[in-house]
Length: 451
Image (cartoon, rainbow, N blue to C red; front, side):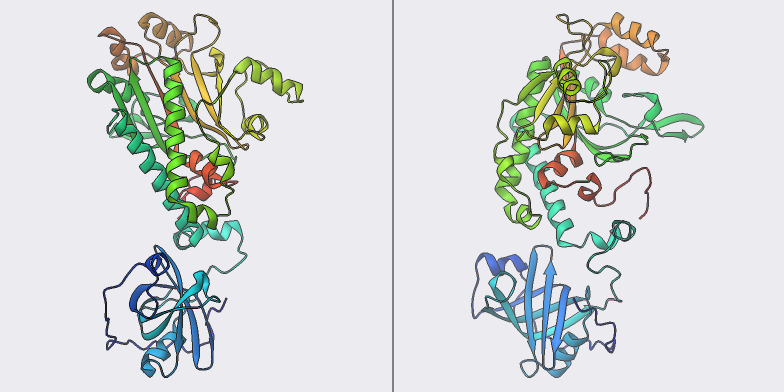
């Protein structure tokens, strides 16, 4: 890789460049190559090297990369000098003829007849083999990488698959608030703030607001940021993440799990169908993803604890499953696994008691295979007002902020269920990444809020 830091920084602005055609996305050159045809592309210098009278410049745009060969004498001298001086990440517009060349990335190149620098770039601070910290400090620049481009496209496609499935199954997208006065998952993990002299929090979950909305729309979902003030330093935790949450009237826990497995499958299938190139760039083995077909395996919490204890884990009944335990349980699986019937002491007060096993709730966590751990948490919701009040009192939780939530049980409650899907967690699994920070453009963790 050549950074051109020792070259004369003079860039000739080639205002005389004649664009014979409107710019085309680079990927079109490879989808339907028009050998011998003139094209114009625009983007940024991804790599560059020169040898006397010839410059090899790899140009990237949002859709891909293409090699441009700039030969002295084939274009005005001012254009050639611009190509020589164009440093990595300079923005450019290039016109030339498409040729087949097996030595070029993708097997085709553009032989330039015009080369214009639009915006010059200072020496780029990111080169090969940089530390993770440097890449995080320069995240605003690192998101230009082909890997981050691929991740963002995969993430968008996964959500396209989700939204299409949700529309087909009569879910309505709604917009719950981010400021809240009550905790959904527990007060110790809330970000507290001063809301014009009153105490408020950043939302951990839209669940309670979605529960209110089912009485009007029956099936609802939202995609919002959620905030967890957990001092967790694991490969699967963020303090700010994107939360896809569903709530469904007239649905009990088993039906809730069926919705989860169908939704997750729709997301994976859409990525496999539309983003094979991106998965290949990330070196993701897609064969395990092809195995993701409902129904998923179901395992009771008590069975999971017995298995973990037999494998030497120091864990007791009543403890929640951590990263290591979830990894051990799913490392050899190719299809997600439901862990059901968690004991009441390790789950939230709003879950429905399982009458067949009253020490547990009718709930589930969906664990991704290959060791990636929890991607969805869900439950049937408690409809008994008395039980909700009893649990709040037992936990010493003030009921004042929850009066509106308790009203949902006072005025025509129905059996209902819901769940929350961590978007970055499912994308991390689909991409095959070790750390969740690599699947969000600007990760927020215990140690990082910059940039």
